[in-house]
Image (tube, rainbow, N blue to C red; front, top):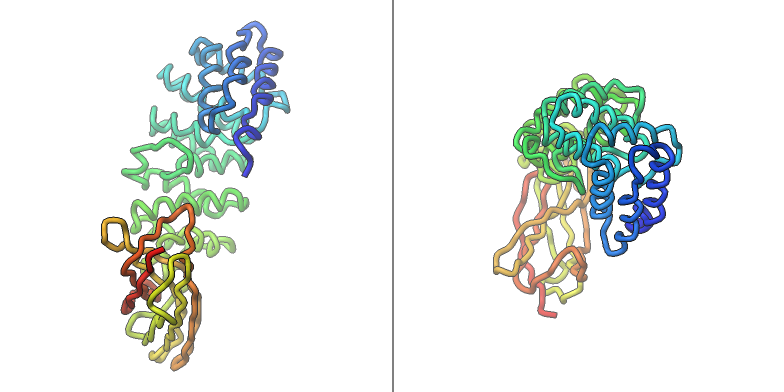
Length: 369
């Protein structure tokens, strides 16, 4: 992963200032932008974008028309590209929102579409969504027919309810259905880049409204393109992991609790050294008269600091079993310390989850370090 200094570097911001000085010399000296390059050393990536964006606003006098003219004058420059574009989009969005006029907001949204192929305007679009949701969603719907794949992707990515690194849009969190028409237009898109954004967006929706996500995916499955099944698998990944019945059926898993017998999980040992691993096996048999296709997961109920346990689901295997057939699964689950999880000694449990149905839990103990 590149560092912040490799993305929004002081050199790139000095380059941005030079571009603006050469293309709009009469508008401003753009001196504040140039000077902001000296203040970036201790800042993270998003802080750098915000700092340079504020410098752009200062040099433009917080005047949207002045800033937009300067940005448009710089657009013919091929070197206006890469991560220096992020603060430009942020400044344009802030100035348009501060102006508050419909004309400036519309013009700013047009600039978002023009800038997004240079990097992405997805983060700055959040400012427009919070300033005027209806106007911004209407613009995004028009972008779904753009010949530019980056613009079509912006329609989906910029309106994601849980876009990483981005500011929240409370209205989309409360009502994710508002952006579904955008996804409906884009799920059959010819670009894998766009379709992946659609899948990620619908996965965000699934965290807020599982029923809406499932019904949307089911509609797409009813009028599929060749690429639709893969998109639905990616979009339903969170719900599949949670054992949502609609999601499991949509991605091709079939078989109920009554179709199966499950033996296990059977741990090799029930006292696990701190930093060691829980090794277990389990056996699943199809006792029905039809084939079953199974998503096999396991659940670890981790001991927490407060003495309670909390479950976490882990993927294990996929199997298709004819009537009367069995399969055996094995796993070693590591308790080696990692930065993203704190392990607490004490009583834990492990259980199998098959097509969303959880079977008997088995106790084991994580020993003191």
